[in-house]
Length: 193
Image (cartoon, rainbow, N blue to C red; front, top):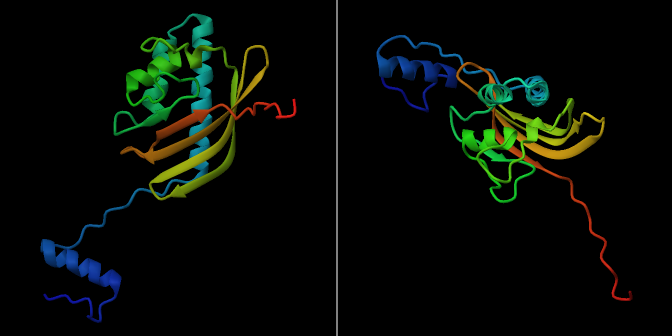
């Protein structure tokens, strides 16, 4: 069977015919993974916030907070399936955390001297406020502010950008995590002073 782009077959028929002609068997339909939705991103954000609170609670209660942090990383980050671009908020000497162990160190301290254990600071709530969410089939990006409530009720505002991909089981995993403190302008003395 000869197939030409100029043939009278429609594009859909052309694709099926080409697959049949090449393989010599009827084409097997493969379902593409479902496109990532805004609702899935928001659910992943809630899971992330709940995970940080769970790590803090485990630390406060004297239970195995490191295991809780490992579960957080295993469940929500893409370290097992590819590269993760992780730039945590409170990192200056080792700004980027490309490995699982470096991320764990940031959350519960250990590997890097600058790490004081961000996730064991007694957080009682995390709330995301999205500036926007962009979804594009098998990946998504979200940017905005998230708010961490401390044990004393104080709230810390942090800026974030998170990227998501779908794993082989259909779960969203974080492949980009960038957090930073909001810009604090410094008063500059005028030349007249």
